[in-house]
Image 1 (cartoon, rainbow, N blue to C red):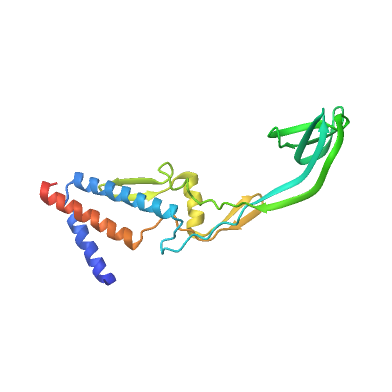
Image 2 (cartoon, helix red, strand yellow):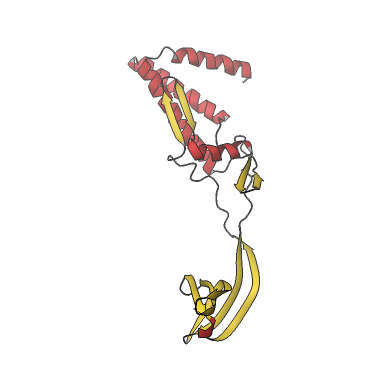
Length: 215
């Protein structure tokens, strides 16, 4: 179907909608807004742009595991990660993440009976699981829908709107003081051909209801 014919049909639908009562137009706006929000949510969760292409995946996070040390303390074998030497109130001490206790612990070197293993190398490894992007932005809490007799709006507010805009248009953002990252385009909002057909279907249903019930 040509674009000119689509424009003619849009005008026809517009003329028909204008014959609705205020309540009918209001119900139509709400129905279109809710339907559009659902379609945006489905597309975001599927990680798809408007043309059906997939979002460019983010760079894989790298988990950096630094230095390991194992020693005997108080007749117990203790293992620390990310450990460091530092000066304590009662002498030199070692502080690091205690793998057995699941917390940061500090041991004075004078209390350590003997060392079993000391690893001063840093090991980097990528995360295995690639998390889907924008899952929170696809929730009802952030993706807002407003419909009334004048139309329907779907979008974001506040900080969510700022984040969405950066990805929608592939903008540059400061992620740390003096550190800037340019993001690829990842379209969160927009109307596809399928959305247009869905809207036409909703209007058609409302026209039939109006004719039947005289709304």
